[in-house]
Amino acid sequence: MELSRREREEIEKQRAKERYDKLHAAGKTDQAKADLARLALIREKREQEAAKRREENRVREEDSKKKMQASGRKTTSDSGPSSSKK
Image (cartoon, rainbow, N blue to C red; front, side):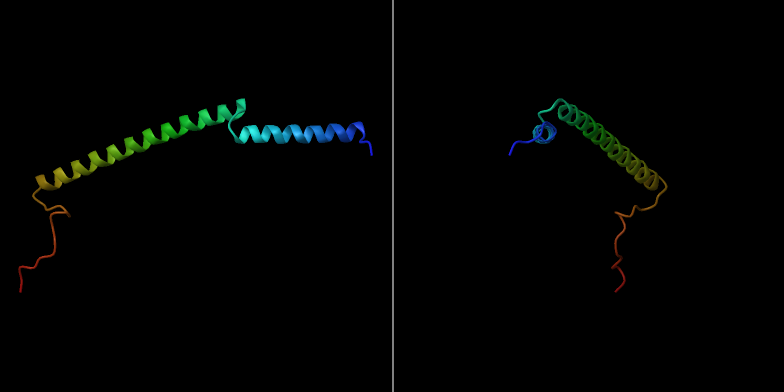
C-alpha cells in the first residue's frame, strides 16, 4: 500500500523530531549547548553566593563570640553540665 504525500510528510516530520530530541538529549544541538552553558553559569553563581553566605555567617559567629567574651559571659560552647555538686 502506497502512503499519501501528507502521510509521508507526517512520518518524516515525526522522524526528524525524534532525531532532534535524541541529539538534544545528548547535548549535541545548538540549543542544548546554550542551555548547558547557561546552567553552568547559574551553578557557578549559586556556589559563589553560597560561599559568600557561609563566610558572612562565620564572621558573624566570630563577632558574636568576641562580644560575649568581652562582656565576661561564657559562650554556649564553653558552658557544660556542672558536676561540682555531689
